[in-house]
Length: 216
Image 1: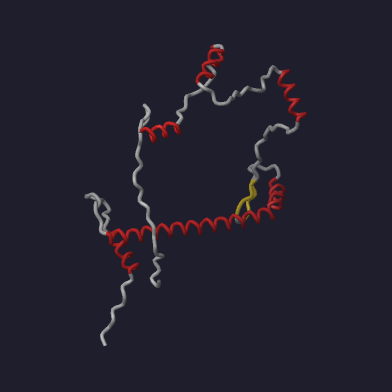
Image 2: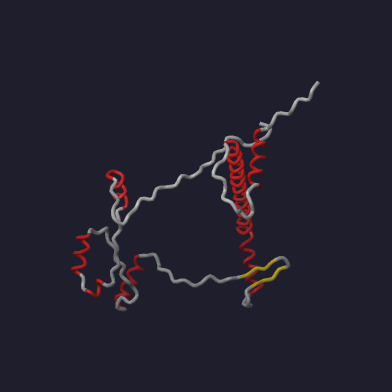
């Protein structure tokens, strides 16, 4: 009885062809890349690139999961033993400089957070500061001006009413109504001066329809 040839696995065959195509890329190209490709080679490249992409995504998810698990371990250990470690460092270091405690397998260090001045959150404290600031000639506060959106007429009226020394302190700019300009172009074909239409390039998207498992 004659030997029966084993069926060809199309996935393995496509991956092998993709390897050949990758090996065919020169290290220092002296000619441009091909402008045409067969459907069979395109199929092999789509499979190879898609599987590599899936592998990257799977690995990144695994690394992210591992990192989260390890961070939870650190948080758990510090939440339970952190106060005791802090007490030990304070007791051993005292006022010594640098503020470090050397251990056989590591170092405990103390670093003081910077001092901060924060406002007391109470109406009484707010009133007390206002009285103090007024008594000091408002040297401890500054005025930040804001307003609703202004029309050009509103802006002109504001400019006309302001003294020159205050006008030089104002900053404003005209902002194009992008949404309305896009609608103008779409409905009439008119492109406003100072604008141009940049048409988007086609983007290649790869979809894989097989997991690439040889036994399936």
